[in-house]
Amino acid sequence: MNSNLTLLVVFLTIFSLGSNAQESIYQDGEHLKFRMHYGFVTAGYATLDVEEKMLDNKEVFHIKGYGATTGMSKFFFKVEDIYQSYVEKGTDRPLRFIRKIDEGGYTKDLKIDFDHQNQEATITNYKYDKTVIRAFPQDAQDMVSAFYYLRNNLDTENVAIGDEEDLDMYFDKGVHKFKMKFLGRETLKTTFGQVPCLKFRPYVEAGRVFKEKESLTVWVSDDGNKIPIVIKADLAVGSLKATLIEFKGLKHPFKIIVD
Image (cartoon, rainbow, N blue to C red; front, side, top):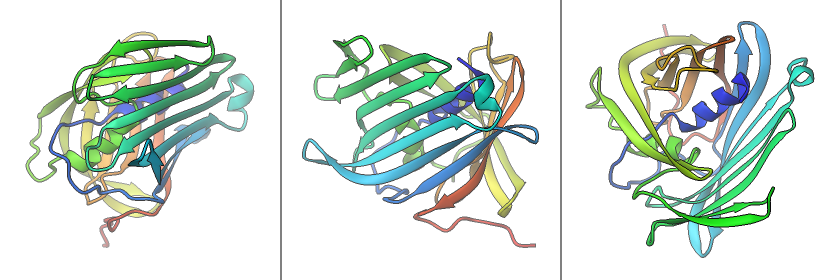
């Protein structure tokens, strides 16, 4: 997996906390756009979009994540990835997950349908024309739904420095454990102004891509939206950032400190 895609995947899976369902803090029409860059060099862009839809007679949020290399980067290693999740309103549970990726010729084309009553996932692999059924743990999230699940359920009033949370993530053919730690609050200077943020340290697997398990840092807006502002990854091949450059359709005011 190349470093640009890895950051996109991490970006889509960094958040997850359990709680009772509540009114969603995001809404139809929300759009977030991020610039992936090595210093001043742009490697690509990633977007997240929310749309209200119906799936199997259930009201859902259709969330689509898209990431691609751009400019000279795509000539060295072309990436075009699509991640989609259909999240049931009122429960924050994923009903369907789609992963369609092309990374320099390496491709995946998967659909996962979640049956929460029987805790079974039907995995359709279009690349190999195969379908299998696997068990999954209760309250498991997919790679996209986890981010929106946290936004609805994170108790930012009572979270304390050093608090750790973990989650069962289900994608491809199995369960993946995920953990993160709250590091505190920090104000970041951005193109939008001074933005108060919550700072997190997701734990990642050290090895070929990341230098060590604490190589990732995430800053999330400390307001009613809880959207990522900056993601920084220390990789085996250098340091990569994802920076929020565009947003619209937020349900709550975007908090900026005015000097």
